Image (cartoon, rainbow, N blue to C red; front, side, top):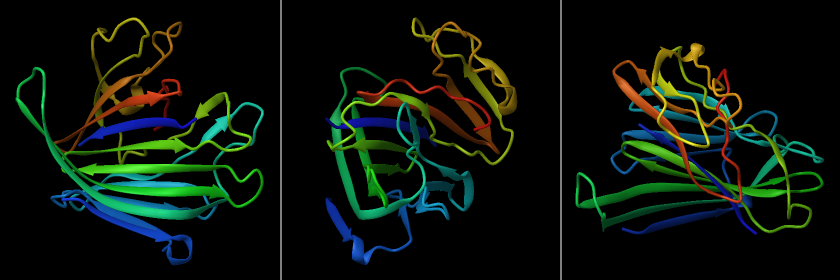
Length: 231
């Protein structure tokens, strides 16, 4: 079983791969037009972290990645990188309907294979795709002993913004995505306004005339994750 979770931040084939004995301490990948840069690294605790720049401006500061499971130790620090791979991808496909008939799908990808240094030595990968107008990343958990079925109690992906930006948001709801949008500062978001409905807040923020949207897609064998502050 392979578990995948994708998170999308809206703001030619080539392949390169490193083995563990050749790996640096941090990795950088840029969008095809060099508009967006993603830095990925392990912090002092051995936890995977990343940051995002738009041009020379940091839009997501150092943010950590990880999970808390029921009945198991949290998947956080104590990691080592077993492999890293970069590739470029470009295609154009025809949409069924929409504003544009042909859609360009062009990105650079960075994939890191991570493993705990100590038992139970769980493994997972983080795959980033960097476009000129945004980034997406996902977790992948390969089949492995001791991790066939897990209950995720906390999804600890961080998005550390660089200020208390003005935002447009609506609370998540299993039934509809048709609540009225609210206009507040980031610190004033009430993502669980529909407390009896699992939250999965749609969020758009303004950062000095730049706009960012936070959304998730392509979840397979994983639940929707709620946004909670501070992010």
